[in-house]
View 1 (cartoon, rainbow, N blue to C red):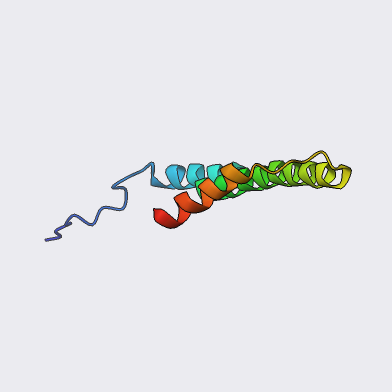
View 2: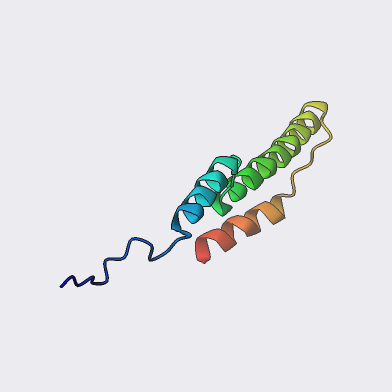
Length: 85
């Protein structure tokens, strides 16, 4: 007497087809570039630095031409605020 257990060769006849489909999809996938949020923030920081640099250059030019006037009261108030807080 022969007893055939659950060892059937065709449990999932579509398995090979599924595997070929997965391989084809992996080959067709294109390279992608993803930028993290941290990298995005760093890029924004570079833009801020450019604005800051332009501001500093403007002040330098105004100092050299003699147009820049310092508000001593405002400057001293900033010092006081910084050291008392």
